[in-house]
Length: 118
Image (cartoon, rainbow, N blue to C red; front, side):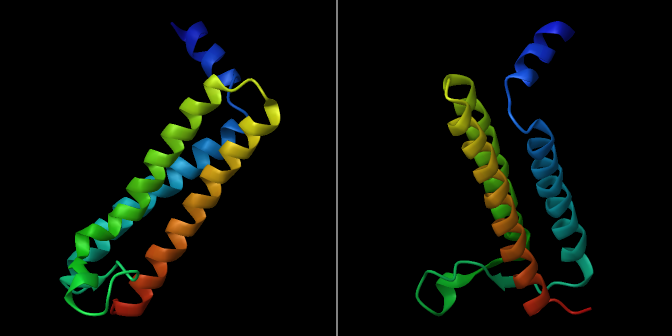
């Protein structure tokens, strides 16, 4: 079983990047849930693409959505990398997962610093 896991992991390029991105997202989910209790208002603006008003406002626990979405993107991209044989495309997919993680972290932190009370 352990040998089978090593074979799968060896097929993923930049495996440390995948681990880092996943760890960052999990940490941000827990950080939002911890900050939610004392430092965030009950409702925060999240969906900036929607028209101004009530449609942008969500409960503060939904600030975990960008990180959970990033984790889903990482999982999908790693799964796709098993199907692709081209090494450049594999690396590009993994790097794009890390870029999605960085963008979701920036989005979440910007909202937290905008409405949070520290």
